[in-house]
Each structure stands twice: as C-alpha cells, then as structure tokens.
Image (tube, rainbow, N blue to C red):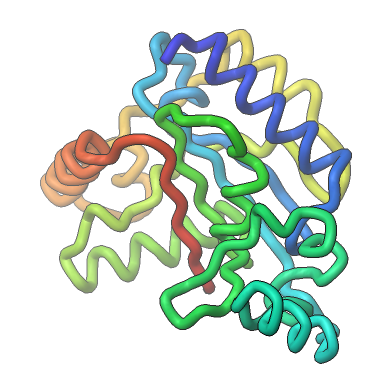
Length: 215
C-alpha cells in the first residue's frame, strides 16, 4: 500500500483509541516494521497494542450477552459497556469466549481490507520482543519472532507527536532485521537465518490479521 495510506490508517487507529471506548483498556500503541522503517510502498502495516486486563467482572452482563448473542465472557474479558455500544464488533475465540484481541481488531480496523497486522499483548512492545525471541529460538520457530524495530506513538492517553512526525518523515534510523536480532543476542548466522524465515513468513500473510499474546 502507499505509505500515505498506511500513515492514514495509523492516525485513524490512534484517534479511535483516543476518542472511543475500547473493549479493554489500551495502554500503548506502537508501529513496527515497514512503516517505522520509512519504506514506500509499505508491504504490510504492523501495529502493536499493549492492553490491560479487566479487574472487575460483571456477571449479569455475562449472562445477558451469552443469552442474547451466544458470546461468553462479556464483562470479564471485555467491557460490558463497550459491548453494549458496539455489539457488532464482538468476536470470540474457539471456545465461544469474547477475545479481546479480535474485538480490538474488529473495532480499530472496521471497514479496512488492506495488508494490516495487529499484535495485542498485556506486555509492552520491548518486553514482548525479548520474550518472543527467547521462545522462538527455543522452539526453532523463527516465524514467531516480533520485529524489534518499533516506535511508540501513544502511551497512557498521550500521543507522542514528535515520534509520529518522525515516522511520517521516515527519518528514523534502524538497523537491518538481522543486525537488530544480533543486538538482541543471536549470533550472526542465526540472526540471518531468523530474518530470512520471518520475511518469508510475512510474505505468506494477506489481508487483515490479528494475534493475541500473554506474557
């Protein structure tokens, strides 16, 4: 997609997080990969959200939504007030429970059918990069690596205008993917192999996708 289009999507996501109730509290918004690197066109727009867990349940809401919509977990896994406003964005996991990452994707990417990937985790981007790398190396599943070249655009209700401007300008300097992985502890050959696998895996993805993760 054209870089301008990708940046418009990023701004739309930021505005939605800032102005509308989300299914779960969103603490951070990052972009990483192609758009952070300043590429044009952008093969795929990668966005990372750090979310908080809901601390209080609403049993009456859970029962009501399970009866009316066949969705479990409303009021505990996603906000009941959000589900009342946006029932069309309710999405479930394979067990029929409301899935926060899928609900966030449905809301934030509503009407978009472009090459966009949304990562959702309870941990910050930096922390998850490290944890995912450890797990991927241990399992030799390099496709699970999270590209560490990211930029935080929003945290705890505040947009980082300077970071956004630099992303728009494409003026941020990042190493190659293999070099970035070496900085995180992989040896040169391992980093090169991991970078190749990750690029090949990303090339197989299409349309809008979402992944939820817990650290």
